[in-house]
Length: 406
Ligand SMILES: [Zn+2]
Image (tube, helix red, strand yellow):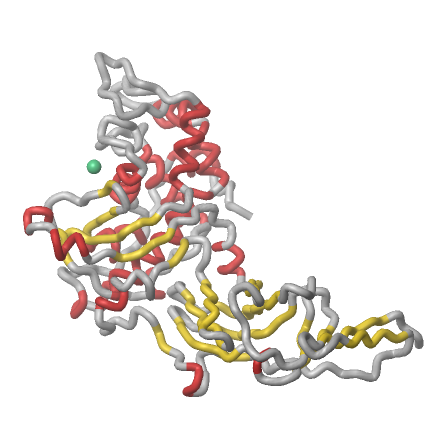
């Protein structure tokens, strides 16, 4: 049978061959082997980041340890012939394809296919193009053969990735682009009255896990809809309040309430604020061992219990509170107000619990980290967190199990 097929032999710097034929191609491509990153040879220098007993100075090294909440897998060109991969996830990813794109060839092609990348994995990989001529699978499904290329700079090769792991697909929906890092300056430079305390990798792994969940919840279409239509949410939330609800009826800003008069935000202003929650700012994480938690500037801090156990039970209110300071909202505003049932801390906590109930967060099982068992690294004792859904959750009452982000 005759077929119109066309395969391209591409030899950069050494001439380009186009092998087009109307005959059944005899050429059988030989692709590079699939890689299981959990069993790499020594030369890949594989390691697990945030091992429990790792020196905390490593997690506090911002050049080495930082991540964006919408980019769990990082790819870096190292030297001219290698890449480093870093996975900021508490569980493994399966079936990851890393593509390369060269400036003078418009199609992407697979240079690594990982069957598995373990949790918090880091390793180095020689770029196969720098070794010898190889066949590569194109994104179109065809084959390209490329001769050896001596080396690359960030201008001469571009990497991208695809992964059909359901977890990865879920994380790719996150709209926040926050750059998250850990900062030791708070416990090193502030006096004891602030109660900042050092963190270690057990806290860091929980923080990373929590931040994917929180960023996913913030990005969720149902949350956006409720945020913008907050007046409707308040009406429904307070319809049966006893005594009757007499508080603010929409988001209000930093000005103090004067005899029941609030500086209400317009829907446009509320929308602008929503986008601030999910922009690309830098976040510096710290921990407090007592007294107040703090937020503001880059800083977001919380108690050990919030990092280790509370968030698994859906108590995310303090996190929301400090995060709101981080986007310049104060205690008078409904974004960081204390104890207001029509405030953001309460709304997000209720929503977060509804997402745990729906199993619509990236991570809902505390067993993936088992941090409560790691008493050597913790400041106090913690029990295994157990989530219980409140039957009066306003999102459950309204959506009755619907609203999952498909
Ligand atoms: Zn506060």
